[in-house]
Image 1 (cartoon, protein in one colour):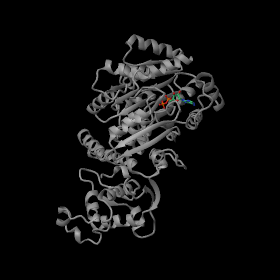
Image 2: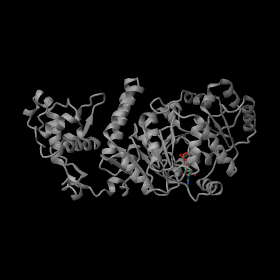
Image 3: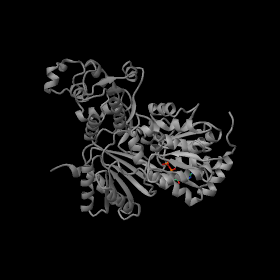
Image 4: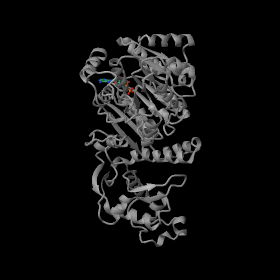
Amino acid sequence: KEPVFSATMEEARELLRKYYGYPDFREGQKKVIASILNGNDTLGIMPTGGGKSICYQIPAMLMSGTTIVISPLISLMKDQVDGLDSIGVPAAYINSSLSYAQVELRIRKAERGEYKLLYVAPERLESERFLELLSNLVVPMVAVDEAHCVSQWGHDFRPSYMRINQLVAHLPERPLLGAFTATATDQVREDIVRHLKLREPQVFVTGFARENLSFSVVKGENKRDVLMRYIREHAEEAGIVYAATRKEVDQLCEFLRRQGVAAGRYHAGMTDKERAEAQEQFLYDEVRVMVASNAFGMGIDKSNVRYVIHFNMPKNMEAYYQEAGRAGRDGEPSDCLLLFSPQDIHIQKFLIEQSVGDPERQSQEYRKLQQMADYCHTPQCLQRYIVRYFGGDTAEDCGQCSNCVSPDLELTDITLEAQQIFSCVRRMRERFGMTLVASVLKGSRNKKVLELGFDSLSTYGLMKSRTEKDIIDLIQLLIAEGYLQLTEGKYPVLKLTAKASGVLAGADRVVQRVRKKSAAPAVKDVET
Ligand code: ADP
């Protein structure tokens, strides 16, 4: 392979110190940059805030010619170019905010080698004429930001990303390709490699563990109370509260204001002007708490957000982590709370049914929703769950998430309970949902149980000393841990997995962190 440039990591580090003022690269950045400097096509999978931009900016500065960056958001592009300008790196962008003459001027300048980086909106690639214009440029690398936009499986498909290939083909020499995204599912990864035609790409999944973030899941409590309590206890700090619908955003914002909290709101139903104003106010700390829909965040770079609270569970882990990851971008300790209620699952299911037509796609969305719900029910370290979900690996528990610190959770052997549940599922021929399985185990005399004759099963009433809610909690935990599976669709049915067979056969034990058996109620809660 003919090296297009030669630069060492030491030179890269020097630029980092000189231009950005940081002492060293983060671990993930190191790997990605070394791979690029070695001349490999590289796919970097990093969370929002992980420091992607430096991964292509610094190599670009070390190569001769102009690196083209494909980036989907006009506002982000401008921020990046302004940022580069301010540290003295020549860069420009080309998007629909420019006239054709301005575009040509910038391309002329690029041809004269005046820019190290040229940001281009993907829509530009639709124009053959534009591609022709680029065909004289010396381009050592094409960096594709938000590369998941090339995949129909991603949450953000942009047809014009399919044209990136044509851009590459138009260039006099085949450049290196760098692709960056925070979405790490296998399908999306495969699509990126295939559609961008990456050659023997090096793939790095890094930075998903954010040590300064403490994750918590709160279940079974009044959400507004929890929210208010938290905001009061953090009265001096800036935070974001995400809610699922515009209506909920409006109502929550109203509620907080009535409680005397300086709250702002942001959702897609507001005018551009209103949204820009809201964003400014938050950026400059005029409002302390931003109540927002998922429309908020793309492109905001407020580093001192101390907490992100999800008032509703989002539709998948990608969305959750992207939003939660907006906390603590300055590296200071920050909190990510998720307030869960079973209703959230219904809302998201409904949204999937409404918005996704294709059945294959729909079942993919259901699977992801299930993994999101599993996050809310896992007794494991939450940070670890996240890192594993995104394909990384960590050896240790974070020691600070709600599961790691909960005094209510203790390590318990629940093999017997698990066997009771599994054998009940099996005897009901894996054809029924959670609620009915719990009713049978409880020994309920409800109509459906009796009609189906389940009161004559040997597992009927096996867990009668527990409440049905307790049994359902256990079932959810066993789903989250991969012993049971819920089928997709309107009426999900419980199935056993291979992992459960080992337990049923007596070969494996189930040891889990579970909620301690509830002690006697606190005296103050007992009515007299
Ligand atoms: P992304 O594009 O992945 O969301 P950015 O490139 O915007 O992330 O970087 C996120 C933040 O981390 C920025 O404030 C950036 O200045 C900072 N950052 C990036 N790399 C480093 C580093 N090596 N050391 C310290 N801070 C860094």
